[in-house]
Structure formats: structure tokens, C-alpha cells
Length: 450
Image 1 (cartoon, rainbow, N blue to C red):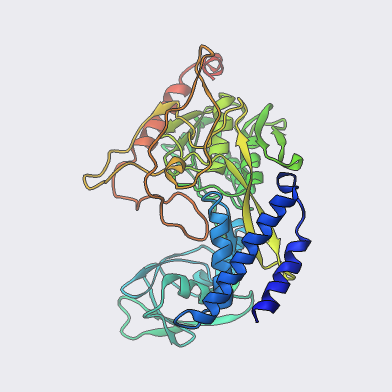
Image 2 (cartoon, rainbow, N blue to C red):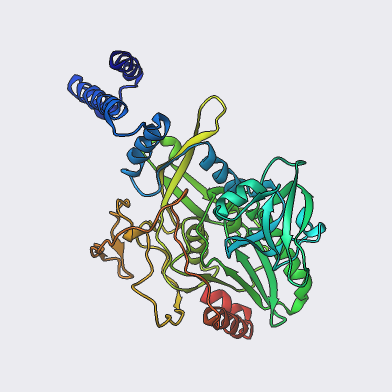
């Protein structure tokens, strides 16, 4: 058996391309030796471990470990994980249209999404779902339950509901439809301030922002004083959507650039003519959990002085990951860090984040422990070797930071925000007050301040 495995591995190794970094015969021999050692260890595991092992799981774990050794954001997705990533990036799935959480061992409906199958079937916030197609949820995880509720568009599912005020549980049959993940919400604050909340950057975000701004302008009319863009707790997402959102508020100039080892990863993106807010003032809210695509938007609007950045320093993820699909069905993939990105002023955000123009911090809860964890706190993160230039043009190296243990990792490494608390949103209140004060200034002064 070992000889067959070794021969197959050798055939694979011989097919590997010779890179510029390992083009000598000795380097190639080292690679073959390491791969041969891997196959020997794998075979020993299969034949001598105390219990039978799952070959597929063992190999996937080895692949994952290899990618994780590079940085916290390079990772491997098997078929199940890749489906979750697809939902995150495309922003749509076949499902029922309910926001849920786990409570008392069953699924509790937080709220149905407007005009979805669950909403039309009469599912209400506060309902408990105890069975799916007759199978009890008790003992399953929320992820397991969601996986069952999602499925092919057009397929029905029967949910068993327990509702307060109704004596007996009852069944509701719901036919799955295409559900869009709501990435953008908007409202009017104090009659004259537009509020735009962006929760993620998926394929729906750019259009969602454009539609929301138009609705805000229609609802507020000429009384509109400005716009708040809330990027707090937004872990990021698609680069293209971050560029589209930035372009919506910029009339000209560079938005972001990327630089990597390969020529195709070196790019620059520029704003097109037109600003959806026609120059009205903008405040962008950020915190320690605003990452990646969120930082691209905040960095672009800050560098062009198009917005005032308010809140806390952002997460500091300044790298770009490329998704490379694998397999005949292209149903599994790797996400590989392929470039760094830079703000219009040429600054790398990696490790450092975007500094707010106005620092406004939430009062820390009495039981809070430690500081928020950012990119610089993740083990194995890519270091930022760019010097920091002060206003006088003198360059000083960044001070080294301690690196605590990393956060728990899931399908995608992203900052995890703390649970919301019932307290006054001091950052939002400050942003509203700031925009009202700015609206009282002559337009010439606002332009000069920007």
C-alpha cells in the first residue's frame, strides 16, 4: 500500500512547477523529501493509530494547517464550508426568510424578513420552532437547524411552531424561495440626517447603498443636512463592492490600490464622476471591529477629505484574499492572501487600521476585560514594514506590539464584535450633532474643512 501511495505522490511531485524561488536541484530534492515524509506519516497514521481515521478529514486538516501557517486569513473550504462562503459573498440563498437564534434548545424567531415565505406564512417574532419536517431540533446546533431550513428554491419544508397564547404546537408548510441577505439598512434621524448602516460587503451591497441614498434624499428632501455611514462591526467582504460604495460618494481620484508578487495583483481603482450626496457632509462611524472592505471605504473617504471618520481605530486588515476554486464541480476552494491594499495616500492599513479624525469611544462595561483584539493581535499575521510619515515628512518605525493569543476561528477569520448592550449610542449622537453643526456653516467653509 505504501509503495502505491508513494508512487502516486511522486507522480504528483514531478508535475509540480519549478518556481523562481526553488529552481535549483537541491531545493527540488528538499521539496520531494518533505512531501515523501508527509506521505510516510500519513500512512503510519492510517495503519497504526488506535482508531480508524477518516482519510479525507486528515488530509483536509493538513491542507488547512499548511494554509494557516501563512497568515490568519488564508484558508481551505471543503464543500460544506464553501457553500456558506458562497452565501456570504453572493448574499442570497434558498430559504424561508427568518432571523433566528438558539433559545432553550430550540430555534427562536427574532423576526421574519418582510415579504419572504416565512412572513407570508404568518411566522411571527417570538415564535419557537421545535421540529423541522417532523425531526426534533432539540440537541442540534443552530448551524445544523439553519442548514436544514435552507435548501433548493421551490422545495417545501414543514416547521412545527410553539407560540405564546396558543395552547398546542402547530405545523406550517413553507416553500423555500430565493432570499437576499440584507446588507444595507437606512432611516432618517431627527428629520434631517440620513443614516446608512452597512453590515457586510456582499454582491448586494453596492446597489443597496445606491438605492438607500436615493430613498433618504427623497424622504428628507431639501431639509437633508448630511449622511451618517455606519461601518461599525462590519467585518468586510468583497473588494469590488467596497470600491463601488466609495465611488458613490467620490467625484474623482484614486480609491484604492493593491500590490502583490504577481503582476495581475497590482491594480489601481479610480472614482467616476458623480457624488450621490452632491457634496453634503458625511460622517463615517467605525470601531475596532470595522475590517477589510470597511477600512477601504473609510480610508478612501478620509484621504479625500470627503468624510469625517468618527469612533475608534479600525481592525487593521490590509490584505486582499483571492478565492481559487478547485475540483471538477468547483465546489471547494482555497482563499489565499495575494496582495496588500493601500489607501489613496499610499498608506498600508495592515496592522495599523484607520485612525478616526475624531475619537469617540463607547464607555467600557464594568465587566470588560482587556482591549479589543485587532489584526496585530492575531498569531501569524502579516507584518506592516511600511514606515509611518508624520506631518513634517520625517519617518519613524512603528513600535512593536505585543501579540496575545488569537481569536477563535471559524469558516472565515474576521473580527468578532461583542454582544450589543442596552445603552446610549454616544458615537451616533455625536455624529448627529456634528452634522447639524456642519450644516449651519456656509458651504465654502465646509469645503475648506474637507
